[in-house]
Image (cartoon, rainbow, N blue to C red):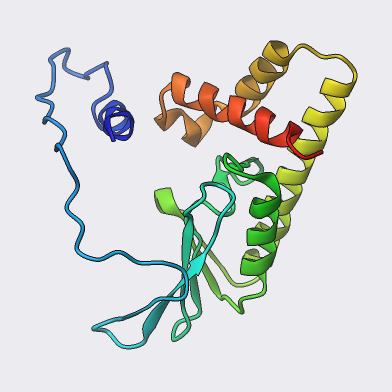
Length: 196
């Protein structure tokens, strides 16, 4: 919990203040209150009508969840499709398991979604939905293949991680601290080399 709250503080209160002053930073809570524990397969009735169906979405993390609102054909993908850095760059986030990550993308692609809702504000509609799934799969496969191939050629792991960090730590991903993304890149390398 302390790590997550530290990242939240760094995103919400960057070190440089426009006026040169310092912002008052709230102390993180000692615990998070839980109203309800949910899992894939659960359905949550909405006051606006319809049910939100929760979907197991492992790969990014072991307990990843996505959600499907059939009434409006909206798929809330959480981190299952990577971080959309820009229109052309997707940062794959298979931090727990590569194969599960790919399986999750393929599973979610089968939903007849008209709208994809990503965390961090991105919304995709219409024909763009299929394109995002294809790009997410390609991004994950390409990065893994590159990591495996470069390692096979004897490339130093530290150099490979630095190359990936330089490639991905840009634009929207810079809301996170560099240390966070370095950890993420390390996980991508480790997960790519597992169970080859």
